[in-house]
Length: 255
Image (cartoon, rainbow, N blue to C red; front, side, top):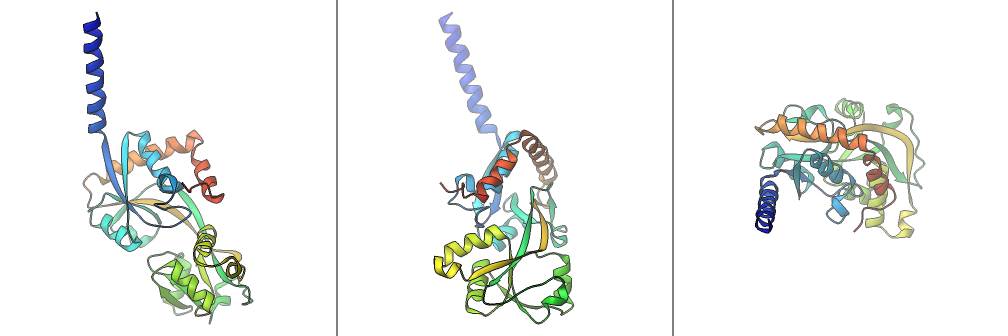
């Protein structure tokens, strides 16, 4: 009897080890974007955590790689990595990527200095104002159309941090960014006294849907996307989903 139990235990151990080794893995690129994504945060922040937990529901393990955002997108586009997490839904991605169900929606608003008396209600109010914009970041179809038509005075920069620094020294007058991301960056870049010089306008410029992207070159892309959407649905129905964003709002991501 003891020998049978030992043999059964050995079989169970081997089976568990085999299942662990055989577990499917997806490799996903991402980048620094506190408070939503960061290598410094527990589970890399709320959105990577959602992605990991959604895939866990369907027994797929996630490996994240952090890169500059433009490189993150290109690595997934070329299928050197399986997917990229996560991007505002933009028409320009549709040619190259399959996109997931919506993870979340986030708003972008204009930051400015308190010394600059800024108010706006329509795009007509933005004419002649020097606006900062960040490469590879989306600000909505209306913003893009107004820019293409030459109705906006936009100055690009490679990063959000650079735009906030330009805002501080007066090289631009307004800069659109998500509220939590903007104030997180201010805390990282400036002294408490300097932060008090900034404010934001409450009117929403753009509300975007955030999605996971998987390259159309990926032969398993449609399968992985279907599994992810299944897992995401399970996660949302479990009640755990909303708690992850509360962590971001109240600074609960840091390790």
